[in-house]
Length: 226
Image 1 (cartoon, helix red, strand yellow):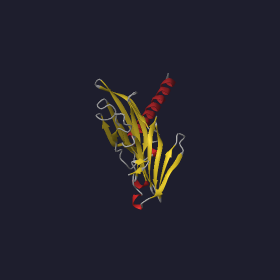
Image 2: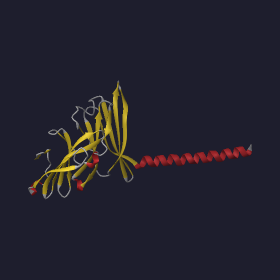
Image 3: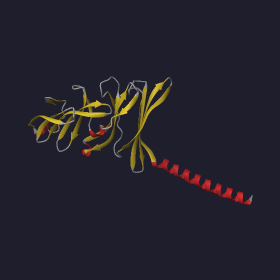
Image 4: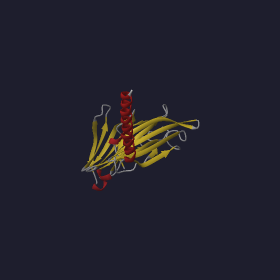
């Protein structure tokens, strides 16, 4: 009996010590995590008034992540449809922008995930609302195309890349990917390319460029128009 009680005492001491260390670990983790930026919208995303999005930028010591939650209204309650966790840079705020990127009548969302070219290239993650499934679809390669915008003239998405010169890239959505259809590049000359169905770039024109126009963004590529 004494042996049993002694063993039980040792086990209780061990469990108490283990629990204390575990609690201390979670308290420390909690203290190192800070919500640096937060955004919520339940009026304009997806089906207006019937969907809600919440985005938090969380810093954990020397790293940041974004937690994005998307909900659908059922009666008086919000039902969670998506939850994503993405890495994020340490510098920028999330700066969400809600608009219709695929001209289907439903609003999608982008947020800033990084910056490049000393801030000239704003990198955003794009999530498209899928009305059939009532969920958000993350566009897997959207961060490859900085300064994205919906192009009304061509009913597509275009991106503007700043480097030694500049490039305007025209894109369409295919599933969860952006696919290039054309591009205009400004450096010593202006060169215009179309992309064939196999993804190959085909040169369609080259002409001289006014040096003052090197950082102009194009709204069309055939012919190139500012």
